[in-house]
Image 1 (spheres, one colour):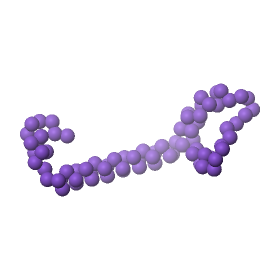
Image 2 (cartoon, one colour):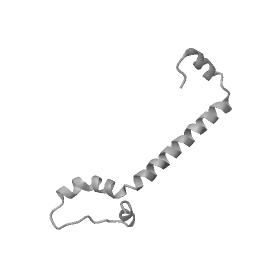
Image 3 (cartoon, rainbow, N blue to C red):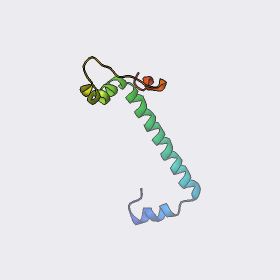
Image 4 (cartoon, rainbow, N blue to C red):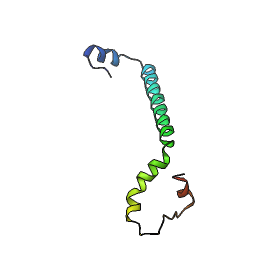
Length: 78
């Protein structure tokens, strides 16, 4: 982002196509960063699932387990 008045003037004078190319590059970087984040977190899916369900396991009665009520729920935490 431009911070000085000179940069702001230059930013305002950009053509529409330059703004769109800046937007496109920002979106590409955002999608790449999101994909890398998903890929890294998938490697720790068991640990994330255990951390997520830890409070629920604490309040479950003894000798009970979680029950999935729909087909897709079993695939949330492989």
